Length: 276
Image 1 (cartoon, rainbow, N blue to C red):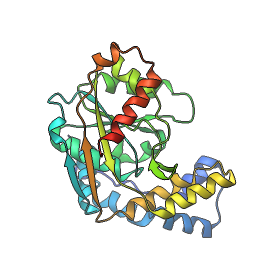
Image 2 (cartoon, rainbow, N blue to C red):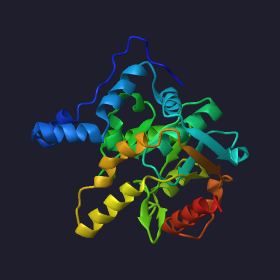
Image 3 (cartoon, helix red, strand yellow):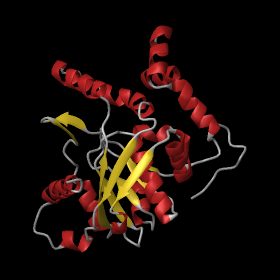
Image 4 (cartoon, one colour):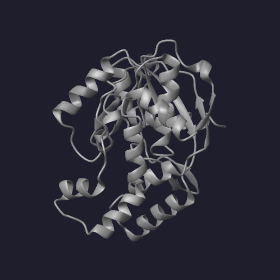
């Protein structure tokens, strides 16, 4: 784990400028003010300034303390001695779950962590050290593929949320969307055992209601993603349980007659069984 120098200049977020540069349109000031409040821009910038000398695991651990998060880890004895594994988890919160898992695994292994994440999250400076960006909406760039292969070949723990997005209200319960099977290939190609994790947590009812309305109206813009910063700030003082299952050897996947899609579904079920 590493700190950056004490004279590091703090990154600051300006949502109006970000939108203008991405879509080439300048929004009315009143719209920008609404967005600033929605994403808690002022407090995010305070955090980025206050912890500007931290990166990676140290930054994530500082966030756990800042948000006064209480964590209960069940099955910690199942964590393998060798950190070079692929840790898979459900994704109920869309932000704070990743922060907490980084803190838990980084503290346990006294090691840096690598996270395979949506490339939209890669822009925050304190995360660049540990986040391995992937494009969930299209083809990967050569540099992204090279970075992914490099980290999977490294001795560091690698964490991924196979759903790619945070959980939604589906069939009467909060659960992930279909898991992408790519993590099976990662495990096999890089000979990494898979460690299943289940994170107990929920976003607010407001979040799920907005998402339900979006789907009913056929709105393509992912409003839920825009609400995630607000959900994170609403989690102050929360208590979460994290369940850790026994590792699944990659050799077991090698000898299986099942397809990658079937194995992904089986491991998804295994993760959700951890809390029962």
